[in-house]
Image 1 (cartoon, rainbow, N blue to C red):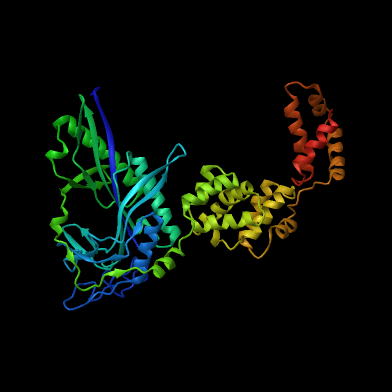
Image 2 (spheres, helix red, strand yellow):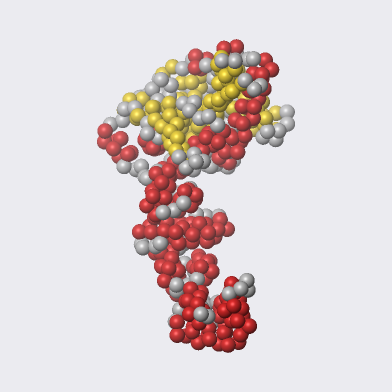
Length: 487
């Protein structure tokens, strides 16, 4: 329809597993991949007469995340029971926070494709326990309750995003933040981070504005699924509006699942409202009161956050936004790079070594750059050797691999023992250049003629010098000598 315009509106609910050793309200160990129903106890199984005890570390992790999201932290918060019946919820209720969440009124900044940043408002962040996991096989289902009781931080944004790309950017940035803080591994393949976008559209047609019914897409555990499910449902909602004219007032909020095989969303049910859960205060847990001293202690654990670090790397070190983004994906790598620069390394050289050499070597060994066994001091020395002309860029890459294999050796020792030091002695190189010029009179003539063959002939002569020195001549010094000799 040529007279139809629309705007996409998306809010996001994010569930983050907190990386504590034990569950939220009992002492059962958290262990991904353990034998089904082997990490359970009377408390997380909801047996009669048992009492929950709050995991202090989980609460502190949740507060750290709230602070990183610029939220107001509640000094008083309580626990509530969210009642519903489902096979993976053994108590038939979930301990959560309803009207007094521990954090609210915050925001997160996300990087946009044009290099700018957009502020997405955070409505609330609250702490609760996760349910178990249903396993479906053929005509029957099984329940694994190892996950039941896992500390779960739920973060709810305002509907401030207007595209699937913006939603993905927020999800990526949030994953970086919780990993930097150390409060979650945020491994989506293990279910540590799940997304539920709420999607609808504001459609303008013939001077009137219409809103499509809100759809919540449940339990997405990859950035790809998150982005594609939103893109699909926007298209589906638009088609439905054109076909039926259905608007928000005419249809309740619904939930849909993502069928990854067919790349479509599938209707599940009409969405429950808050009153359907019959919330009431949890009688077995005391409220939490956050003192000034306790809050100050938690605040002291907040590190420089990834987007701020990325911007600093661009402004302070002159890196491109892309390179700064690559380096700040992982906190340990970013801090390794930062320390390398503080030791006197050239930022761009160090960036090239880390992103091109050491990240490749780390991927091959399935670890991080900081876990390779090398030190910032070694990389700083390596960059300084390149800047001085002691080694070529090719030799530097060779040294990277050798140093990872033998981290007890410095780059200088490796360069010496493997004959990788460049020859920069002008007197010695001048004799070799003169011999090459004498042996290749035709090429010399081509250079001096200044014709089309000049540049090619100059490159040939440089190559001959490099060949005679087995690649050890400093190309810059050789080029200067050739310019002087070929006038």
